[in-house]
Length: 148
Image (cartoon, rainbow, N blue to C red; front, side, top):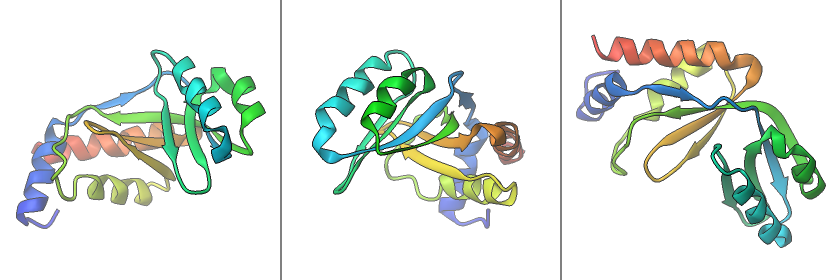
């Protein structure tokens, strides 16, 4: 980080960031927009696990636990995974600039492909299950180094 006020703020936030790894395996799926109601019902079935629904012009994207695979595959036109979900366990203000940038640089350098998914309070990344250790290692190193 170069030392600008935005970089300094992001560094201070990273020093407080903890990485939460959701224990389940996840799938990312594309669902036709005319099946939005069914997609919403699947999200409700996820209960205490991570779930995400993004309504776009031409599709509904769902991130759901692998345990819902039979229901998801009957609805989806495409699926990908298995993924693991990493949550940046830190509530962020919506005006923060550059928070994800150093994480994305580190993950790219480690050869980790990501699918970002942001909520109102926290940010999340999907990483392929095979890349989980590399992703967690890179992000935890970033948090440690930001605190020094």
